[in-house]
Each structure stands twice: as structure tokens, then as C-alpha cells.
View: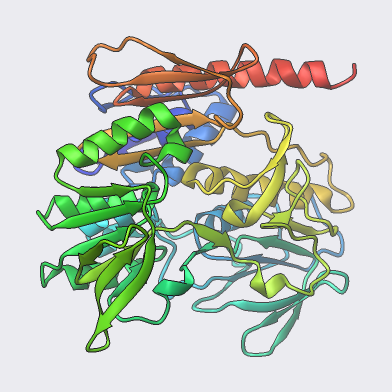
Length: 65
Length: 406
């Protein structure tokens, strides 16, 4: 599982960080850091998927595998 | 799970809550028919981007749409540009606008909310609200003529529109009845900050003022007369006067309504097999032990999923029971390149604490109620706000433990 961030559109709203803080971290300059590799934990991965579809700017893309 | 005898689930509403409910049902082991009645002509789209990225021209039309939902089993039927006109909760049937009647075993109501348009603003050309993509396109089309704009309401939509319009250098008057901007949303301290921010950025802010009358010239709005008798000449009026839950079609359905669809902690309505999610749902939030309706993007997503899961769990033969939906609301706002964020609910707080930040000009504050943290807000302070989110959740859980007998 890999996350691709569209840096042009990501505005650092932190929605993803609220849903899966283990993986997403927005710093105070509103830059999104993604912790990779993404943990194998099924519960965390379910929340990562939710974070991707919850991004209001649609700046996250998920590549499974 | 087989869900014996469950033949059809209907999801009503095509915004994020409906989209999330449909995604969850398709991802779950549900093999019956799923009928999605969505008012959208195209797909579901991002609402938060409308007043910001889209109107400012930073996001294109095509970039607004949520991804297609994978339908591996082929059990999804989508009715686009369609709405339900009635529900019979006891008989478990819904009626489509065209008069057709559809029976269901499960229903998830995600019909959202509609922009509140005060009586004086209705039926006049040059007066627009913002709720849908079509509304945003109508506003964008008006901007070509570089209009002078009066914005009615200093809430989230009004403030974001004012900031977006100032990025084009347009002349803006923002009219708000309260003494600050966004005060109800962010509390009085940040309300002052937001007021100052808009004034520094050249918005003519009129607080403590309301529009008494809109004056038309040649069939189009030309001026607004305010409560203090002053008159604002204007070419366009934008209305950000809040929204009301879209429950008109549920009158007479038998469903319990009170400023939304009344739900228990699992998002179940007053009738078995009928759940609600998103702006339309007034549910019992266990974290705050109170009924609330939350009109924010992240809640819509999480509630859509939770309502869908709980609906499946409520059917005979389900292996798990429905789970309460406990939520710490979160929302943000972008204005003049700054990001305002809030987690939790500050209603009824008895103390506000100000905190030091790296940039002393940017506020960070926490809201407390009887020594417990209930909300936190900040400007460009994502990490700190999200850390408080965890603490708010821990405090809420400890309150719950106290409230629940062992």
C-alpha cells in the first residue's frame, strides 16, 4: 500500500491526520508528511483508506499492493 | 453474512454521507440490491472546495469529483438527478419524484441540508446562496463583471466567500448581526481575531447589523438597507445565513423529526431498518452525551460509513451488534492563506486558555468545561490542534465511564 500526495492541491487541512494519525502528519507549515511503509495492521489500513476518500481536496491517491 | 430476506437497501442523497454509505455497503458482504438515489447530475463532489479552491479558480471543475465507487458484484443501481418525495416508515416504502414507489428492507437517509434563504432575499435576481456546485458556478459567472458584493452572514460560508472575493480585489461589505465574525463557530476570542483579519484585508465589515430590505432596480438587486438605516449600494448579494436539514420530504412519514432526523447513538432512526447520516442526522453523540447535528465534511464521511455498517448489523442473522457512533467534530476554514482549525464542541465552556505558539501572532486556544477539555482551536497549528483532539477524546471517554454503571 502506497499513498501519493498531490502537492499542488494538498492544503494541509489535516482531515487525514485526524482519521489516521499513525500515517499522516501535517506540520505547522501545513506540509503533509506520510509515514512509510504503511503499517500492516488491518485496522490502521482501513482508516488510511477512509482518510484517502475523506480528503476534501481529493489530494490523496492510494496504490494498493 | 447472508442477510436472509434482505433484498433491497436504498441510500438517499448523493453528497459525501451518501457516497460513504454506498462505498461501505459495496465493500461489505451485502449481496442484495443497492439503490442509490442521488440528486447529483454527475458524480459526488467536494463541498468544502466550493467556497475556496473552486471559486478562487485554484481547482478545476473536473478536480472536484470524488472517485467512482468500485462495484465488483454489480449490485449497485444509481438513479442520478433523482430525489425521493415521500417515505412511509412503517410500510418501508419510498416514493420517487416521478411517482414510482420502491420497497426497501434498509434505508440510509443522507439528504443533507439546504441553504437558509431569509424571506427578504428570496425571488430577486442578483441574490445567491452557496450550497451546491451549481450555486458556485452561478457565483463564479457573476464575478466576470467585477461586481460590488454584499455578503449577508459572517459564518463559515460568508467569511470564506469574503476572503475568496478579496483575492480578486473585489469590493466587499460583510454584514453580520453578532459583534464578531465566526464567533458562534470558533468562540469569542477567535471571533475577534477573524474580524480583525477581514478588516486588515480590506473588507468593509458591518457587525451588529442586519439587512432590513433589498432594493431592486430594473428587476435586479441594487442596494441593501441595513438595520441602522445605512444603505449599501451593491451589484450582487451573497447569502451565508446557515442551512436547514432537508427533511421536507419526510413530513408525514412517521419518522421522528426535530431539526433533522432524530437518531440514537448508533444513527438508527425511530424506525427499524432506517438510519441517517450527515447534515440531516440529529444523533446522540456519546462523547458529549447530547443530541447534536454536525454539518462538517469529516463527520459526513464517518457517519455515512457507520450508518451503513450499523444498518447491516441490525438485520437478523448479523454476527455483530450495531456500535454507537462517538465523534469529536473537526472542521477548518481557509481565509487569506491562513488555516483556522477546531476540534470538539465549545458550547457551554466555562474557561478558555490561550497557549504560546512558535509564531506569537497566531492564536492557539483550548476550551474547558468543569476542568475537562472539550474543544481546541488554532490558526496554522495543525499538529497542536490534533494533539488536543486525542486529549479531548480521552477526557470524553473518561466522562462516559463515569456516566455508565459498571
